[in-house]
Image (cartoon, rainbow, N blue to C red; front, top):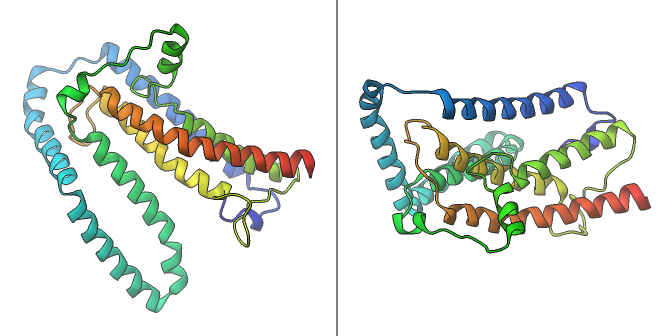
Length: 252
């Protein structure tokens, strides 16, 4: 997306990588579903791994409690490293900003989702009276499946970029000058990628151990916080995507 203007047509590998990514996501989902039904862990394995899982969970909880102190130290360290790199290669330093921001979003999502939740909050249940609303909430319950609205919209945006080059129409990305929108379509996709990881982590922690962190039942509080972010991020991204299509494809 950042090199959109550099290509007349995207390489075929771009389509292949997208297809491989989607297939791996589906395969991983099927594996977890099969493990839920058929996997039986022996008691000895549970006992030998128990200490490791508890220690890692304790570490995540402590990391969240001291998040401001740890975060401030990381920001200072990264700033010093980037300044040193900029002295020798300013272009390299600026190119590292986006990957660092991405890793920051993923790291914050991971720690927040994986930390222990207050038991009283976890037990709270929201049961709407409307059957239609209940069915809709099941569709966007990311404790049951990892295919979030953010992921679907992200794939749609990526396909829009790929297909625009294939069919020979150019998108107005509004990345410089006086942009029409608050954010550009590439930056919207970038923010969506962080939301996708949050949805994936809540699904993973609901169904299996991960990096030594024990499987725990996820409450609705974290889920509804993700939905709140979706209203803002997905809503804005979708409107910008529609606007770009209307202006560049239909009108232009």
